[in-house]
Length: 127
Image (cartoon, rainbow, N blue to C red; front, side, top):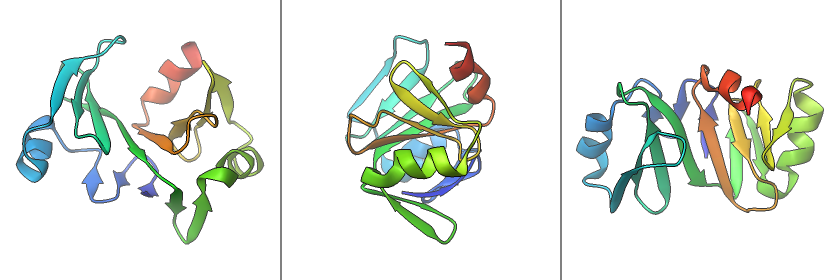
């Protein structure tokens, strides 16, 4: 996963709408509303979640390595890296959330990592 926090994950910008994703990737193998009211487009290796209005909220994918700028962090070291580099990081519902890097993940569930839109951090804090 190449992450530019709050801007882009790999080749997908957080300005993308669901139509952009379908145009690029084709029809998802599953599309449904999830338990927190977001529309999910599941492609197996990556899941995109959108608000009702079409705004992209989250991109979740399997990432054995997360690349942030020039730093490549293996999933096994991600927790310690986040804790050392982001003093504002916090835990919610078993996830470690990093406002600095705009991501959330469950350290016990390799290798799934969720990149967040900036406005999502408040929602995670409120959990």
